[in-house]
Image (tube, rainbow, N blue to C red; front, top):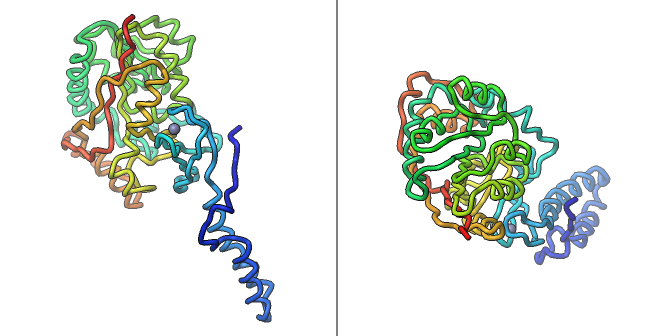
Amino acid sequence: MPEERTQHSEDSKGRTGPEDLRGSVATFDRVEEGATAIATLSTKNHEVFESRVRDRSHVCLACGQASVHRFLYRKNGCDILRCEQCGLGRAETMGFDPESYYTSDYFSGKRPDGYADYIGTENILRREFAGTVEFIRKFRASGRLLDVGCAYGFFLQEAKRFFDVSGIELAEDAAEHCRRSGLNVFTGQADETLLGRLGTTDVIVLLDVIEHLPSPRDTIALLVNHLDPGGIIVITTGDFGSLYSRVAGAHWRLMTPPQHLWFFSQASMQAMATSLGLEVEHLDHPWKVVPLSLISFQLTRMSGLRPKRIAISNRLGLPVNLFDAMRVVLRKPSR
Ligand SMILES: [Zn+2]
């Protein structure tokens, strides 16, 4: 269990300290309905006070330090904290069950923080994934490739032109769709059993997946064991240290707990990779062609309206770069 700390001695201005509260009480003592007023005021003071004592100490899964995790804000009922050492963000959730969450609803616009219409945008997604395959081939031209969280297999369809591909997907409908399309895809989580059945591989990709994992460090460590020496792990995820993320705060487009649980910065990605014996070979913030339907879906959601699907925009894509998402290539040293 994470150790919790209170830090009421830390407030130098003393606005939320006990002395202030006593002062307020004295003032209101003279009023006739003093008791009620005191109760109201105390509650208010307590709220301010509480936001400052929500900092916690955790052992950070990225940098490995037992460090202060600063309370930033609450989003969707989850506390968002950030490691003071490396900048890794974490969402503290209560009883979130990924298996019951990542169903077909997630990919078809029925969840506001999921995809608008994943299958309907296959053409745009596949063009985008073809570019990703081209990028990966600069680091590894061929061999065996495993896609962790492969969804409907659109990336694998592009990758199989050069690689011997397989995938793992938690959503049963999506995994079934892959198998019907002739792909070697297993339903479940990337655990020891499943990876054991797959054997070792040369390339492992996690495209916008690591932020969803309950314990990304354990998963990556397992994956490293199933990676051949000289092999690579390619990860895409948001950049919590980016300007947009810092300015937008709780309104950042990728700040969607409990769906997203981890928010990596460049430093936290570097720290985790190094501690797992991997070398960061490449890190950039790539341009991306995004379906117009997803853009309007996310904009509508951020404006607080109920997202609606717009049929025509499924076929159109826009090149987008907010420099708030990173692409990382990690290499397992060949000994
Ligand atoms: Zn850290």
